[in-house]
Image 1 (cartoon, rainbow, N blue to C red):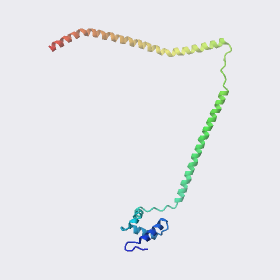
Image 2 (spheres, rainbow, N blue to C red):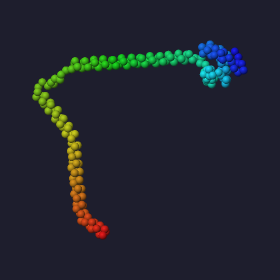
Image 3 (tube, rainbow, N blue to C red):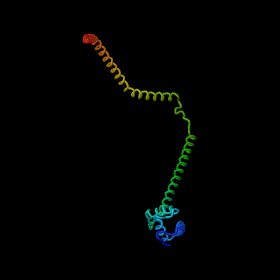
Image 4 (spheres, rainbow, N blue to C red):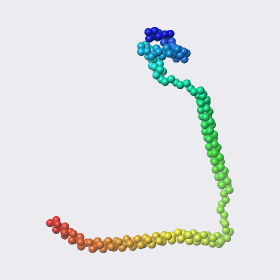
Length: 195
């Protein structure tokens, strides 16, 4: 195949395209296709293919994979499988822990409820029990009284504050009473200013 006057037989191009899309072309045939589609006067029915080849020519070449590319892929897959195994083990551990905790709670509840004993009397003599109760109540009362002593100071402060407020109120009332005659003087001054 060769380019004749910058053109090639369209039937040959179509045959080469079929071969190209099947992946059976040689590098020389692909080069011919690239040259053909790089020209301006491409038949209208091959314009779509021309766009594809222009894209391939403009796109950068795909680099060849490195020598250890397969090893990297395999190790990535193995690492992913290891991570997956760890996650499965962790889920299993959490499930077993939950089951163990539930069993522990059930067992503890069983023993707590079955071995529960009713409170009994600690004193057989009611007079001793009464005396002990009174002793405990007196101790509680004494401690409560100690705690409320500080409140006595608060009531004293409240009384003194009330006395101070009352005294200030009386002083204010006296000042107001003494100011009333001055109000009359101020009103008469205002009247004389307005006239």
